[in-house]
Image (cartoon, rainbow, N blue to C red; front, side, top):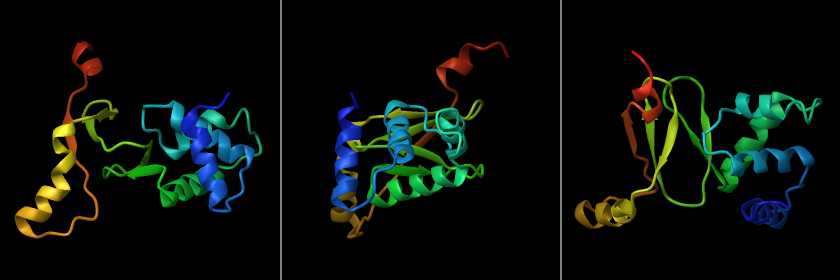
Amino acid sequence: MAHPMVTDSLNKLRNENIRITPQREAILEFMVETDNHPTADEIYQALSAAFPSMSAATVYNNLHLFTKVGFVKELTYGDGASRFDFTNTQHYHAICEKCGAVLDLYYPVLDDLEDVTESLIGFEVTHHRMEVYGVCADCLVLPK
């Protein structure tokens, strides 16, 4: 049985008159089930055995569709490879400077950041993003 977030997302796509293909559903399931913020190529590699005729372009196109619809956020960090995050809650990211891992960081104290910004300086916020950089727990235990 599909994850409830997958089912909800597929229903939203249907409501937008977007056709549900097996590849589209598989990419969405992969995004919901992973927490490692994969690149499009990583998704393609993970699904290519199940969908041998699927191209990398299919993955990219679907990720951009999901981004446009609002299920997925594209994360760019200047390293040339976008990472993708299926998101249904506001959260931030901690990025390891050694291995490149991107970890979710939930910090509810910042939930009202946009409202505070608007009230303090009259700035109309459209969105925000915060990143914390350092070394992840896995890399800290590796021998130097």
